Structure formats: C-alpha cells, structure tokens
Image (cartoon, rainbow over all chains, first blue to last red):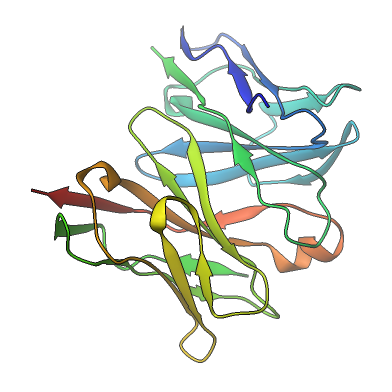
Length: 115
Length: 118
C-alpha cells in the first residue's frame, strides 16, 4: 500500500512569488492535514480537510490556503512568499477525522526555501 | 488549551542500554497520545499511540510507552537501544475539543534528539 506522497520534495522560490504543494493521501484515507516545521517554531498545524471541506485551521495568515479534491488529494498554496515561510511542509493522512484511534501518517514533506 | 512538553532537547545513550524519552501532557478530558520519529530530511513515522486500556503500549521497532495518568506523562522507552534509533522523537496529543467535532489536529512537543553511541 503506497504511503502519503508529497510533491515536489524540494522547492526554491523568490520572495513575493506563490507556491503550490501537493499531497496524495494513503488510498482510502479521507482526512488530510498540513503542518509547517521550522527549527524555531517546531511543528505547527496549518489546516485539515475532510470531504473537500476545511475542518480546522491553525493560526497562520490568509496567505496560506488549501483545498481538497474529490479523490482526497490536497493542495496547499502560499501566496506572496516571505523568507520566514522557508520550512518543511508536512502532509498527514488519516482514515477519517473521527474521534477514535485513527493515527495520522505523514509524507516525507516538501522542503521550501524562499530566497 | 492542550499542550505537550518534552523537557530534554537531547538524550544520549550507549548502544545496548535502555533508553527513555520523556513527555508530559496537559489536556482537559481523556488524552489521546502519540509518539512519532523523524529521521533527517524525512517526514514523521508513527511509533505508537495511547487511546485507552493498558498503560503500557507497545509499538514499532521495539519501542513502548508508559502512560501515567497521575503524573500526566507518556514516556517512550526501549529496553536496548540501537545506533539506528538515533533520530528526532516527537510526542503529540490530539486536540480533544476538536475531537468531538471530528477534528484531527495534533499538538506536538518540541522534540527530543536521541543519540545512540557505540
């Protein structure tokens, strides 16, 4: 069974540009969450999608957005990039966002560098 | 608000010795706790979880964790460390408030770098 696939693995962008990251969850998983990992702030929750609907959102500016498609694949977009957006962006998939013991499985991440 | 604390930035242990990586939590209600491991330039790998039941939880790669409600701790343990266990370990708790609404948000600790030496 294939794991969580994130593309691309590495990106270099210039300040002011925008970027789109993609995440394909494990087959059958319908919940996708995104996290930002930086040395200074650690792992921070961005947002979560289920059935094409955003369920939860973290404390990030509106420049960070996402969406989920009918096949559960998800994309996140960052507009007007800033140097501080340089980070490892991780996608996690879960079977459902239900209340029980559904652990999240993470992709290998996309390393975004803003110059 | 819930939180997770990992009091040690780094833990050093000799190969073959037992290891412990500490985690304490603060939640309202029942905790849903997880341990993940991260190797350099990689994503997080799920190790184990505590939802309910036995306080000693067994996970992948010989790891286990002990849930202690009175001390609000969920320490990760392994009886005999390997050099290949050297990695960054994260403790996490699922958001209980969001949980009831079907949320899946995880709050992570700051991570503990485990270094296992020969």
